Each structure stands twice: as structure tokens, then as C-alpha cells.
Amino acid sequence: MCVFDKDVVEFIDTSASDGFIFFSHGTFVSSKDLTGPFQDLIFNTMANFTDIQFTIKWHGDISNKLPKNIKTVTWTSQQDLFGSITIQMVISNF
Image (cartoon, rainbow, N blue to C red; front, side):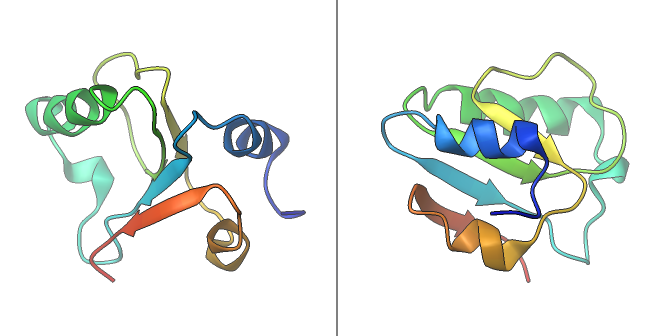
């Protein structure tokens, strides 16, 4: 995982007991266009899964403080991310 920022590597390496999930809107939906209520819905739902951490591809502002089990990235090497032994799932609309 040499192309990740140090904080992303630490987040993934110390992922909760059930690993982490990568969440991306793909190219058809821009996260910077998501309103506060929709952001809250996404982040509050993920916060309920306390044993799982989420890495989210995200651009733009975030309306509230993120739960501790969520890490946003503007870009990541998906090949390296998918190669992590702690990844459990990918949610996307590729």
C-alpha cells in the first residue's frame, strides 16, 4: 500500500475487528452535490456498524463531524486498496 497517505494506511491497518468497507459514488454522482440531510443519512448509517470501518471516496464539504469509523479520501489507488487483507466489501456504482 505504498501509494496511500500515512493516515489512510494507519486507518486501514488498525481497522476494527471486522475490517473495512470501501464506499465510492463512482463517476456519475458527485459527493460535493450531496446535501447535509443525505450526508447525515449515509454517515449515521455507517456509524451504526461500530465493528466496521469505512473508507469513502469524497469530494467537497461535510456538513457534520464524521464518526470515528469513517475516513474520507479524495483519491486512492483502488488496486492497492482492494489488495488489503482487511477489506471486506466494496460499495460503488462503477
